[in-house]
Image 1: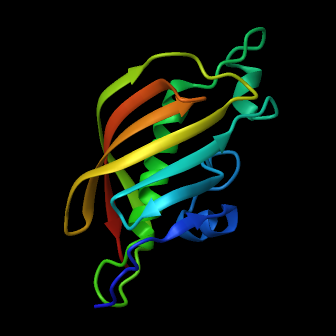
Image 2: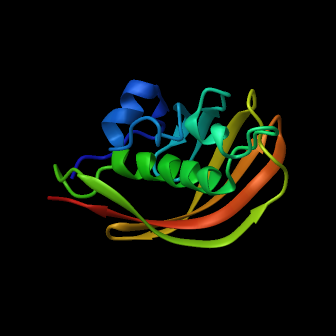
Length: 154
């Protein structure tokens, strides 16, 4: 089994796209920083008015959908799980969102905001991980949830 380095550092958008199958318009994380193995990280999402959901949510007062904040948390956690080797050379081919618990939405996220997804591992068993996530804008909590993911190797 290959050991992971103590600190992975960061993943730019190209690395994120290597780790996740998501693509525009459904990729909800632009980069990941402060990666500490599969223990914790911070995902970054730059919210822009050009995103397709703003044409309907809501045209006169655009608000980033809360469900997409949760998806961004899940993608951030999934990416660091995929980066973390499972067993020897086994590489995950997919990551599936399994559970969502204790979701709360505190403040709206608007175009121009930079969302930080602060993810911390709660536990993991074999191919399953559980994380606690907080979405923040300028240090203010805007959403939180506990999520679970399963990695699949083929």
